[in-house]
Length: 253
Image (cartoon, rainbow, N blue to C red):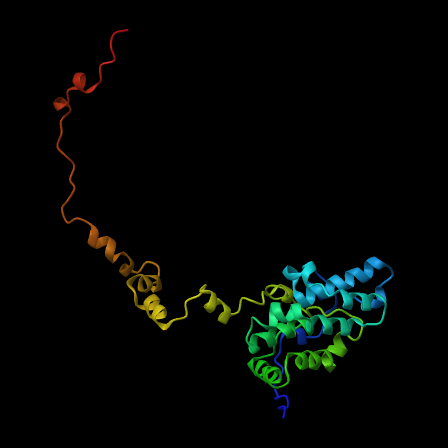
């Protein structure tokens, strides 16, 4: 028996703020791809590539990952943009590149960014949808998002999903799916062992870094290394210097 979707409260994020009109029209405003604007073969190709960029991300648009059958159905009008997005998210390539390399919590956040154009509201939403993935499978999770009222209101049948409202940090379709915290630990690019934490916190070097600028403690080692003996100027008279022998002989001209 599948568990019902847990309740969660939407947080106040940028994508929930109503448009400010002209103030939102700047370099961060996404270009919206719609079937209604298609007037040539080039336009439908633009919709296809925009869909790949949104679902697969910019750096994973490879010929090897393309879905020829879905593209043909979209071109001849037998498939809507909504179902084309659904097919890309359920494809073997997406499963291999995104689903199989993430835990359910991060997978929820990435899929929300790709299909609904927003990040997860909070941890409660990530937990709620991760339970759906665990009980019904990833395919049912995709259907729940694409068939949702939120998707219908914002994108409908013929609009390619895009990042809604203001941009913060990297665009959502550039978030690397493989580089979550758990994957970093497996790959050895981060050190999360508690011993490294203690080492970084309690060593003398770490303590010195936490001192404020100008604190005498920062210069204790340097002061201890100085010699206690004075370095006084030598008493030397100009009459004691033998200039003739000190200057090298260069021979006769």
